Length: 185
Length: 446
Image (cartoon, rainbow over all chains, first blue to last red; front, side, top):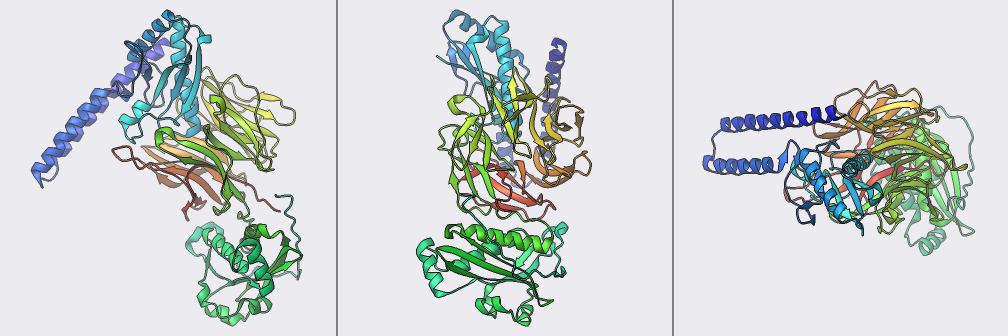
């Protein structure tokens, strides 16, 4: 199981590499494009490049690593973790976030939480309900590993029903593939 | 409402008529049959009575419009413009002058008469073969006046059946989810309407999220998913009485419900600890049975019409694919092997096909395949569409489509669409609000 996870993480890194290469190829193609209204094109290209860099800064592979929409349960304790498409594997960053949540929950033993699992809009509704449940459970399992008792955690899936970003683009989808830890009391 | 609707059918002339007109249903709308739907004739006293009761100036014309609209949307018929009709409705119903109808290229003619008798609506109609100059069918119905739209649908079904040799699908309803509000905070309500969009009614208030309503093929019961009290569970709703109840007592989310063909069981998924498995509950004995037991996600189950098999989707191979198994969960076989992901399998009421949603290279498709997975045919491609539901005769699929938002995240909408099994005749189904998750009822009569 652990080996599996390591392999999958390695895959993520590789796929990130592929995406970067893909971007590079795209840029070359753009250079070869016909040279009408050059200055305007130049500008749009600049914009595109900054856009790509921005997205690159906010996504690793296709997992969101930015801070848009993230709320904090306490100082330094982010409320959510993000997932790759169709995946429920916790990334290194997600595990870090969940360890911080676990520490905070251990220090505040009266608090109970609901883990809300979500999916992006690029899947069928029923499968996404199951996927959201699987994601929230991945987060729950990790919290339990770090000492949070299961009776303090409730899991609910919203599938693709409650996106935080209404965009129809990879960045928006990456923000929506998430498990959010919400205080229940 | 259904029980109140008593249809008395008289067959005037029970003679055998050779099927002279034939509509080739396998070819879709390539060559729709030209036919004339003459307004149903009505005497002045009846007209006034109905005007008072129903607030419709001429109920005869209204009923014929329903028939005309149904036949046109089927894609198999081309109802001709009434302005070209030479013969008055009352005389045409007695004895059509076939040469007149032939002149405007009508191959079939529908005529009829409406009467107000003992506070009831009595409608008779006749179907004529223009070329052979013969009556093909004559029927009469008596019902309460408020059922006038259903009379139009039943006439449409009779004509469709007589001319195509297959049962119609017009006297049916669609249950769906009505949607409003921004994409991030959608308000969803259960809604029901006639197959042609009329008589729309909301069944829930929108206080809680509701999803995936499905009709019982054997009655007017509906099963759906509700987030009532923030606990996603499968519910059973009687749309006539409005009573509802939770299905089973599961310690977690139940979802993706559907009825068995006999209407006695509900099949659904139950999610626990990151795994989703398929269960059934017998509605009479309340007995719950586990059908699949696998660490993967098993969902979207659908029975074959004989109840012996179940199709479902599972990611046990790593990605979402379609499987078929026996109704006890044994003999699981994967049937989808094409490129991409496959979901929402639904068994055709005829038994020979499974409709599905496919995701491939960022596009969503509605398609059909044989029950062994061969003969895959994609009917329509779009940015996002899913959840096909069959018309009761297995000729038409209804599904929903969502639009891509712009760079600001605006412009989202969800609408119902239908498409013929042939891949032709794609149509937007107009709804008052945005709409998703449609489910087609069985025929309400016969």
